[in-house]
Length: 159
Image (cartoon, rainbow, N blue to C red):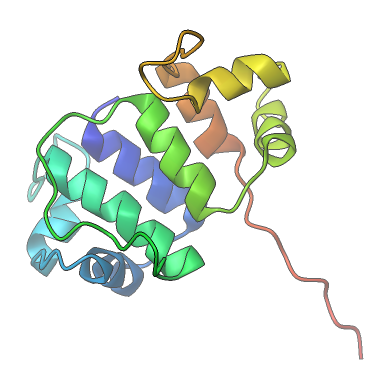
């Protein structure tokens, strides 16, 4: 998947508004102008489309972690982001951290779209790249996760 497609799917899954997106970029010090930020979420054929660089996607995911989980005092977010390509496993890891999900939650989310993985298959996506049992996540698995995600809802208060 392209960086722009990943951003569009994250925005749709988490129902993020423009103000929230701008704040997420600001969480890590990326001063992305509103036209570029809006352009990242447009379809490629649309006027105003802007190709999302790897550094912006990495910054957005780290900003998402800060927005949902807060700042980690022991390991603050990096001030500069490399332009190294993030693979689907990297995106999957950062989303799992931001959404504070355990393997059961991830499997439930994937199960909503018909993807059923064993605990060991799922764990292989979250291992470090040098590990013997590391396996990169496919586009289909990441799409299924983002399609199946439903934000947890608070119980409705009946009066």
